[in-house]
Image 1 (cartoon, rainbow, N blue to C red):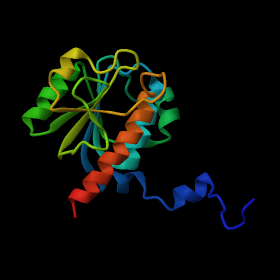
Image 2 (image 1 turned 135 degrees about the vertical axis):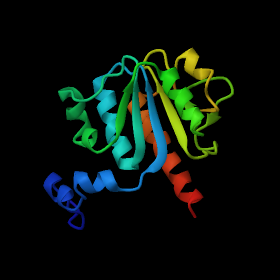
Image 3 (image 1 turned 180 degrees about the vertical axis):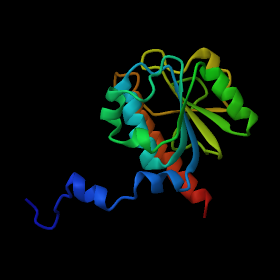
Length: 183
């Protein structure tokens, strides 16, 4: 074992982190994450964790997407369900229309004609990123409301990555570009 690297325990890591109250007061990246009928509570919990890591502004849980308080979401979220603002909305389209009214640019993460490589796209803020159902992707009704669409290249036989994994990849590119835009 390499002696120059000593792993931190979970407790050590938490000691160095701000409290839930402090996190809730921090400035957030102007990124709204819209979950369009996500089936898996484990994916929802994992997306909460990534949103916490990215300091995303809010998660919109739409349609059949489960929402807190739920033990299975909390288990995957590891506390992020307490630090990320969220709202349940019955339809994704309703959410997207309200965001558009408030000047938010809508981006879908979907394999689609006309979509751009996620690293080549230029993200304008405030931004909403729509993540679709694990089987059917972003719904057709929501695709019609997008201002832009990005995709992750799939070089093998699989059509897509797990939705939570895909969000983590694209989310960090969005964070990087947001940091660049701030100077």
